[in-house]
Length: 627
Image (tube, rainbow, N blue to C red):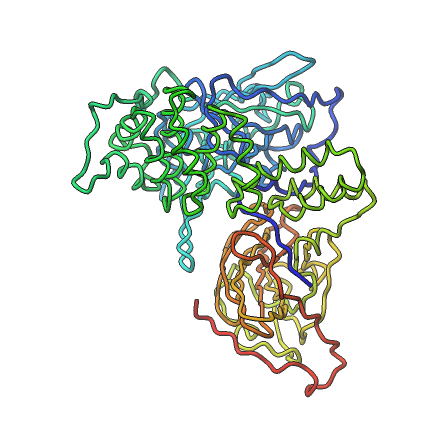
């Protein structure tokens, strides 16, 4: 079997979520007409509908709640939709960066101890825009929220508290806390990006909020949030403006000081004056320096990449398509060592100057390791397949597009077309999900103690072992390893089914991967629970986050398979939350070649029957806890 794993983080839409009790149908039908991109808007990321226009951040989403009790006004899609009116199709961190780019200054999140201190930061006006019966309508976010006690619309403003960051000590990766759902809050949260500057709790009845149902369009209605610093400049001062070339200075090493400043943008410091001046200087450069800005994105942090990309956009916007350095940009697109996001930006600039030439380049980019570049090439293949009249050639064209696709939306599109043509596709096999496991549990995770506790499966993997465990109900066991195979179309293993509906518990899943020869791979997985995983005893991933939503290819980590059998061990931790949406603890995992391609010569070895004798079972392996 070949593990054909065709995805890339960041460009994939999350799976559809079940609607909660607040999702009762409205009296009027949904007007699904999407809004056009804002006129003159500068898009911040190809894979997210986020623009900067008119000194504001624009982001698309949809209505997800019309009845219930609110903690948020808006959350990222797939997170806290059960207590938010709107879910937006963007990471929270990208919106944070957009607010910095339009001149907003973050303050501080709420403090509860030793005494209450409300959140601070620049005031942000939040508007909602949607289409109703062909008419574009706009409302303040506060108009869609009302007090549970007084039934009056909320009057509190929103402030840019700025959330915060957590650094994973094992991987060094930084995580923006608002990604868990705390985007635009109406109840104080320590992870809030936007919050209300007053204590909002169930004990303060006038500040306990619910949707203003009569004013909210039906569930599923496309909407656009507009986040704009209040007043002409806000507390952060005027937004940065491009400088003139004579203001530029160059360091002794030949790298412009302003460009170095943008590359060194630090997470958590906001848009300080030095950074804002640097952006204004770079944004004022001549068009022939555009590739220089794009080259600076290579190896930059996501925050620095965002600052550099918006500066590059400002250069391209100001100079016009005809003055862009087309030959240099074409060479940049073809340089696969550059930042994928920067190469995608260069191709967009080329498309402005010469759309036909840019489209023609895509024929050579179908196998590009950058998903950002490959996406457009595959879209071209799908469009050509749709236009093909001959049924046989049409089927072959869709099959080629499916093999080339690296994002779930394009994979689903090609698979659906093939099914209509009489060629159904098993996506779990096509995408290379690991579907056959051994599972064991529950071990103790009361109070979160289990995430860092070393339980016996982490010391030795013995298929015949017997364990004693614990969950919130008390001691559990004895239990051992048992086989479990999922038939979910996208490979999800729900541990409620595999092990049981335990709370305050740890479960393990163990799979054996056989490689014909030493093979570098990437482990790509998603889970709503806290997780760790090892390959042949080496810790290669750890994420201690509970019930914050799960996106397709949520986590990606590199690993090395040796020739022969390889032990893949996953630790899944369930906490003790009682909310209905916190009862599942799933894992969906697959293995991919570096960059998301297919892995040849690798197969999953089915768990043996536990009726076999000890001599027939594979010898126990000895994983270690060293990262």
